[in-house]
Image (cartoon, one colour):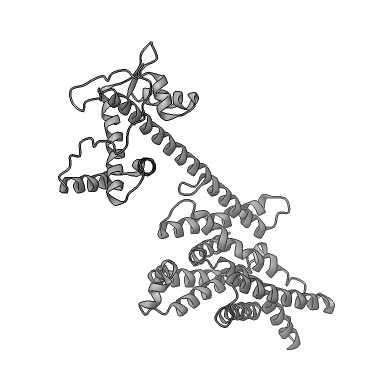
Length: 432
């Protein structure tokens, strides 16, 4: 469990930078490219009269093979015009094919000398010994220390690589150090979940963390937490489950975290975005109706006054419906919502009357909309419909700072900013 947890943490940390660098697939390439190194190291040990199961020798072979794949990707990217995904696919397929061929050769060796080598493909969490744990602890300290010391450089490389290069930073060297950390994670991950599944721990937790935050440090902590928790939960599931392998169980827990984040993440989760969009539309509809009520009263020469008026004149629903061109259900929903907020009252005849707080809200909506209309009309010659649509699209995002900037511009021009005149005629409606 300790080994799985440490692997999940360091894989989650390194994976964040791979995700930001858009190089997550290179982790998959290195993972698959480690297979021929494992097999070749085993065959060399057998040829030299050894057992073929020397841990250090196997991991060194995997490291050399994985490092060679990373170098191959870099060289092909410089000397060819192939797209990065094509290069990664070619290198991954080539190394994996070599690895599987060598493994088929090993399986034909008599006396089952190759038995147990497949544990490095699918992991061997249940049979980890102290030497494996010590190696994983040392790798965890190395990776976390490297990422901590290089955190500023990695952040600059991830978010603005051109600026990093122009400022004299050795972008290529920093990238190579990141790939070195990836290689270390792959090597130690072979003992826990196997070289095939370790890539999932470098991709899934960082991708899950991105649904919760847009800041780097929280993303790293969330990714590390999910990776470590996946290691703990996956190990427990494997322990108490009937014949459930540890490596796949860990990856499945990480996948469950991803699905949870996909739907409920507070930054980019599907349900959260739906909720935000729903609230945004509700806010927009509220402001549109409040502005329409004001403008209907304005066309009749009785606009609500900012001071000293506790109730506006009534507006009939027919005129309001014509003004908004909405369906009856949508309009009724919005009226019910703003009535619960205390902005309007509806008399027995069905007419809408603004309350004192409703008058203030309607004035705010009209003011924001018309300030934007006048601002746009000063920038370019646009049709009244275009001015109206532009103001409609932006008025709900106009915060206090933006509003103050608009007001300052109008004050500098000597214009009144209380309630500007509409730059286009208000549509005439029924005056019942």
